[in-house]
Length: 356
Image (cartoon, rainbow, N blue to C red; front, side, top):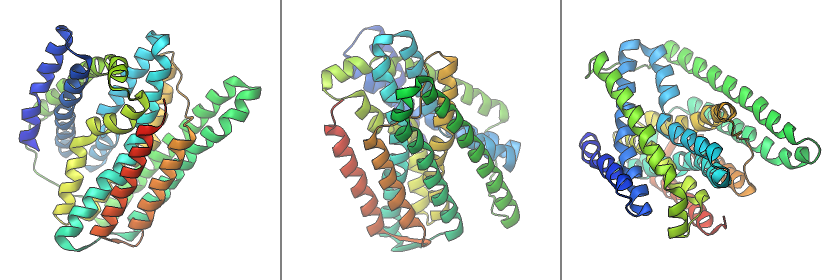
């Protein structure tokens, strides 16, 4: 993956040149998307290196807060552009909400599916800790409840109190972040008690890791401006909705480096670590990134509410149920990977044909 990241850096330059020379919006969009991929990979690597120096507790917190930083930057830029351009606001806010949904679906179905499938083909049957899988499954169900309640209650509340929908989203966001923080504390306690924390020798100096982290963050923010700016022309040219771009493409761009690691761990028969990456990333998006965006959007003057449409909620419920059923018994096989991927493909086709 390291050499792939270095190779993909060329698209950072291509995206900049394409933007300056006003090339086709489709080319600008996809060049920027591919340029984000290696920068997200370097950001993840720098975070891991810093975590080694800071120790397991602070390191775990770094990984927990920066694990989906690339996608967070993209969505913040979209919210900011929506605030500055009222005519684009509806489409960009749809992109933001869809990217939240798409991240959870991608981690639970696509990445977990590939991990279980490829690991199962190599080792036939793989096992992992049922207790931790059960905790993750419960947390995922809680996350979906937290996203579903504002979505289902908002219409009735809006009829009598429009501001009430925003207040509901803020209240739910506070609870979600509190639960997420407590889950991190619980995870630290479990690692301390069982002694499962892994230690590796650092490959970078602290100064190098910080420099790479800052450079990658700035680069992703810059490319996000280009990426989001090309959304509307791309939607018009390709005939797809902002919603579909958010569901499928944005989550892949922001998390692909992490996704590759999850699959690699499965191929090394480290299914507990593979599940921790895919399920943990889903929890981070649902319980931390989504509510954090609620507060960031308020600061930017473009309030984001945790109200998702019925299609998104239905897809999320289905994804959580099948991933929970597959992980609760503490073992997996390649057929279960096929089942997860099958559900992801079905949902993707449905969202492709869903009108904007």
